[in-house]
Length: 107
Image 1 (cartoon, rainbow, N blue to C red):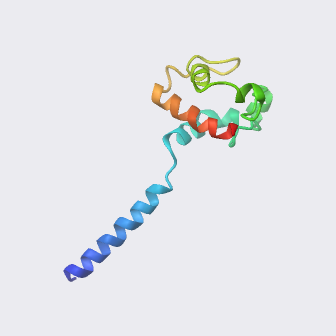
Image 2: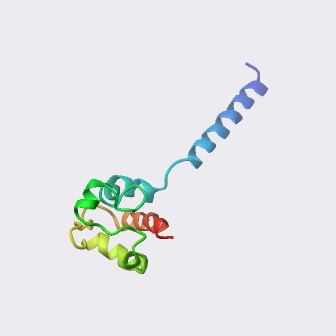
Image 3: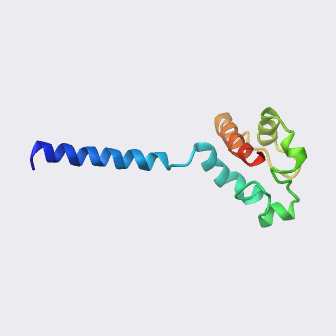
């Protein structure tokens, strides 16, 4: 295989990999999906079976919308109502990222 052909194949592979990376989910989205979605629902609407049975408020609820990011982080870290604390299960960065992702549903 000539150098030109090898370089072309390498360039195509790099472009394909770069495109794949752009579709990867954020760390906050990944954490939300594994730790939060079961109760808060796919889009934060608390429409899952667990969310409904525990009467979780959806992201669109006025009480949830008025919470600051710091208040939400504190609720995740220390627990709130029936929600267990995650301070010993997630890092501060994971909690912050998951809260940032959840807050996209409140808009």
